[in-house]
Length: 217
Length: 271
Image (tube, rainbow over all chains, first blue to last red; front, side, top):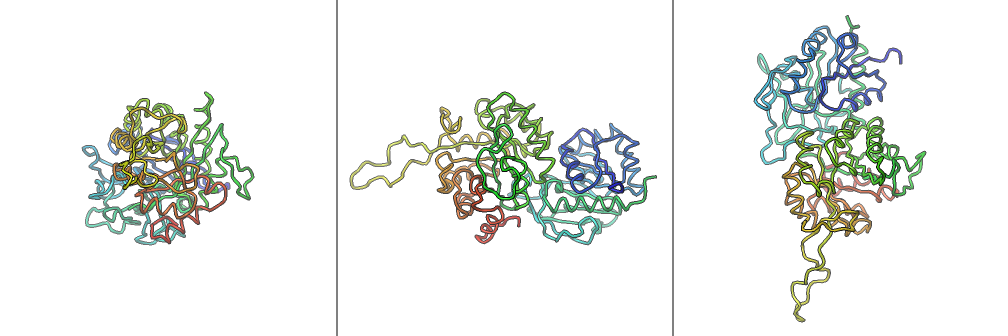
């Protein structure tokens, strides 16, 4: 596996990174947890995980300089995959806990799940509908269940609706966006590393995208 | 709505599965991780490991179990047994567990639930309750013309510790579930000590009483002996998930068969 994609799981001090790392290794990728700029620049792909609150996460990302590093690598064409809070951080802003500015790699805002009468957070397996084709979800049938734990959702939009960024949706009180994609920037609200065979397939697809991406500059 | 869940439960002592298994094709049926991989492949939605190690090395054994599971199994899993502090929980969550389950430690010090929820979020905190019907009440009537219905026990349940041997004074199971959730638990793992190990089916009345009392998911546990019991716990008991041990461990049914039965009974599950 000398040509296996080298993927760095970005560590900014929040959340459990180990499961993501092990799932990547399970599908044959070379995974490392870190935030070292040289290591990040040498990676074929980046994963931005995250558990917790948006404002605190952005604070830590800025404190470690990862915001500029992620923007630099995304602009250079390196595939980036945000998972859970990591997906939300890719957007422009969130209203969580008084609000905060995000990385802005995707257009739109993150707001509370609109699920009157239902328990929030939404926890559990939900069928995910693919709204378009993507290399990220190749071989995974539409309406395959993935595992979710979240209270907020990303709402892609920008200079006019950016519906083309919407890759997947699921239902909980409302039909919400749970996967997004623009060029080499991907995000999933669900946890592929906890979604059994379907989740592993998605990570394998991401590793495949990383292996084919232009060599790191 | 999230899909209803089927959750195999593994009792682990010093890193080994305690209840016997008769699976074919496992190199070592006593290895919890190997069994967990098998259940993942069969379609289990989550796993619960209850550590019953008595020794003081307990914390090391559950952290090691969490680590090995996270290395090999890619569905959510909960670890219970021996979690008595935020530091204990931190150790197993860092190792890759998704939730911790607490039982007697929360009864001894209910503030623990709030501490865990503040640190990790309610979605990480499961309150495990071992409940048993109160049987020391008088039947509703002693009139010879209107005998108490057979099997009448009164609709209250006590809370037990030490594997059902010791009742916690002054604790009612339904009230404790409500309090535990108010303090920060995000899910209730409810075991009927009357039914556990009987194969007679879940205590539906208990399950319904707790499900109606709390605004969080309830996992029914104790008594599953056939697949119809799983459907009943969800449809009649109001459970969001069913926990099973022996029905799967002894090879009586696979998780896939359980899912098929639930689906045939009109319950939405992950297939």
